[in-house]
Image (tube, rainbow, N blue to C red):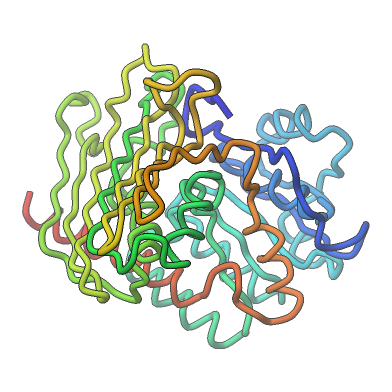
Length: 359
């Protein structure tokens, strides 16, 4: 859990419920360009899914994956993955601007697709995937790990949706990240490939703003991006911020940046502040510097019951993965609706476009 970089963040649940039996639901891992694939695979395995095979055109990436998942069969080709009738789902973490096209190929092959965030880098890609989902009836799912794979965020979602703080008035999401400059691949610096900071890590925040406010859309009030400290990579953006008015009427704001210092014990001190008509929630996802013990995954709740520090680490679990598998088997949408995924991507892409136009 104490990953030094965001790209190797791959939590493991202390207590996981398997929703399917051995061999009942098989998936493939493919296109291992981002380390989030390890979190995606962990979650699926913990929920009982079987990893049928792994594929990447780069044998070095496959070798690294096999070090973590020894014995996994290696697919001979991408076409072999698509043609395998036992594979029901493909989990992938490709270079961002390739994700939509790969997802379309997966859905054309009669399978569901589970991609790392961001799901798209352009609105045209979003439109093409929407059309393909409508055509095929397959699902295009997204690993929004900053909410789905953080126990304090899972607990906060439960509390907020259960009315613990009344109606949500405002959500402020602060999402700093460590740059780890020397470890980044070439595509990381190329805006055409990564999509911009609001498109990329901003998509996490849009997922959370919609979820915590109970909204289905958002109006963008302002959006800004900048490159303050990386002039050697002129297409890179190391800072971004957006203000929204959510469809619920609540205020939504997030800041994303790449300025977590190397001396920080975590890759980013992610925090979420939620104000309701009858209380507040503060989520301390990865670090809480003023508390002893294991200073992660805790939240502060203030409401009619008083002030509480709720410890979440190794207590809440990650129900998304099991719910997703059951949704795909039964045609339900408990884990996350397709409409929510598309809207999260849309409002992040539109904010990026607004910020680009203002530069």
